[in-house]
Amino acid sequence: SLEMHPLDTENRLGDLKETDGIGYCNITKCCTKVCPEHITITDNAIIPLKERVVDQFYDPLKKLFRIFKPKE
Image 1 (cartoon, rainbow, N blue to C red):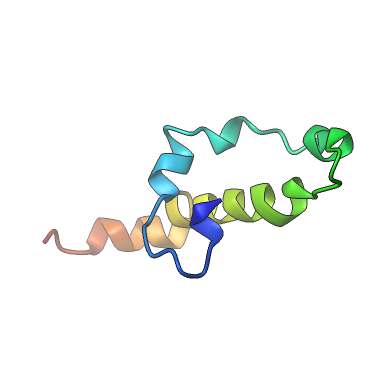
Image 2: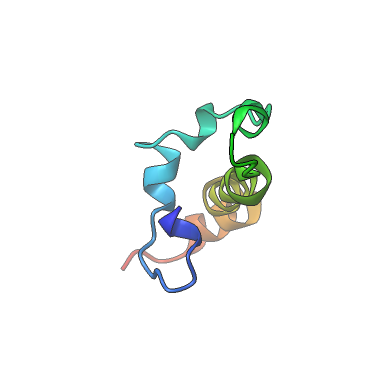
């Protein structure tokens, strides 16, 4: 995923949350089990991306600060 590449500076967390629907992945590792190249995409990409989306959009402290932060 480009979102995880160290040289990429574009913020795609909103797209991952809404458009691309990473929330629909149920992390059962079905894709890892059937991967002919034995890529552990669930552990190395999907779970970290889901954690980043949750931290950005659902963290209670961040929500609280957004309420009191003045609009720019």
